[in-house]
Every structure is written in C-alpha cells, then in structure tokens.
Length: 130
Image (tube, rainbow, N blue to C red):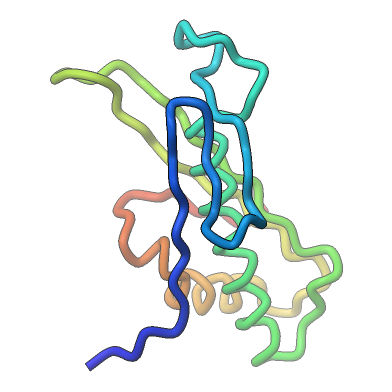
C-alpha cells in the first residue's frame, strides 16, 4: 500500500489557474498561434514547466547520491502540438538535460528518469543529454 506524501490541488477556470494554498495564481489563455489572445501563459507552457521542473528535482536527488553539483543543472522542456488524425490535437514532449561538471551524467540521468513521477506516468517523453 502506498503512503500519500503530498497532494497538490489546482483549480482551473476559463481565465486561469490557482493553487489551493494561493502560491500559484496565473492567467491562462490559448496562444495566438491557436487562435487565442495570448498575453498569458498557456497549458503547453505549464506542461513543459511541470515536466522539466519535476525532472530537475529528480536530478537533484540523483546527484545527491553520487555527490554531484546542482549549481549548473538545467532542463529545457518542450511541448509541440500537432493536428490530430482524430479530433483536437496531439502532443509530443521533449526534455533536454544539461549536467556540466558531472562525472557520469548518463548514470545520473538514468537514475533521475527512473524516479521522476511524471516521467513514470507519461509515455513517450524524449529525454536527451546535452
């Protein structure tokens, strides 16, 4: 049986998102490229931020086990929307990882991707080491 460690709750409306603790409060709109007004963040940016920041935290844990530095650690998240053969859109996700000064970056990345909860549940995320 799993033990719940943390629960995040965010409410979304037609104008934005707000976390139950008030720390997150953002206007969210469709980007201009998809016919929206732009000028705010959009779901695609939020997904890229969620994936990349989750992997950063997992990399911190992995680096802690091998004694690496997190000072220059970086993850660039990309979400690409495409037309769907069915209805709506399809999306692809990619993460580019930079681990300068790490002796065995591939091993650290392998450990981090194995513990990152978002990567465990989302199939097909391309993760590359820069």
